[in-house]
Length: 169
Image 1 (spheres, one colour):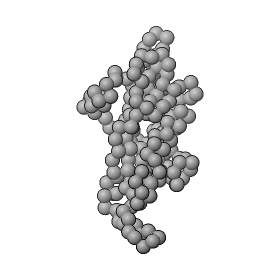
Image 2 (tube, helix red, strand yellow):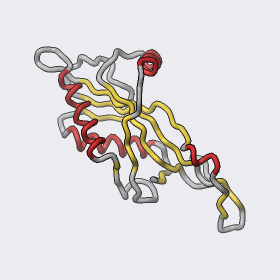
Image 3 (cartoon, rainbow, N blue to C red):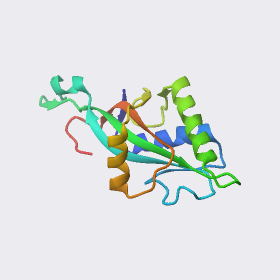
Image 4 (cartoon, rainbow, N blue to C red):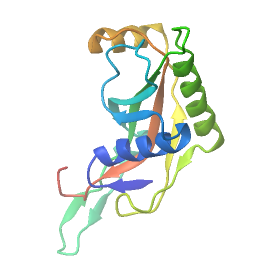
């Protein structure tokens, strides 16, 4: 489990990992999907979708603070991101987007844990798993974001804990 002070640290760690996977010529950002999926430049966007508590965190006990007070333990969370890719070939089809998505899927299947001692207070890793997605989820995502469909996947990243037991982040 990774303990972070800011939720954005999780997304930035994920984008750094993707950047290392797809190489330097690809524009990788923590942002909404690219407006025009037919743009020629290869790009990847990591878009926050939702966050959910781990089932075990609902029954966690209180922790004793040094001053004698009790405080709830920080919830253990999982963060869901949509990772979309685009980029066209000379012929005008979206081959680059498909290839980028394939590279990322292979990376997370072969090495599903992201390790970084530079993020948060702990050097523990984050698990990145491909999340099941269906046509209904696809419709909700693209209808709310108002963007055209493109190669994409949803990943579950976690577990994480935010901040301290008494501080709000």
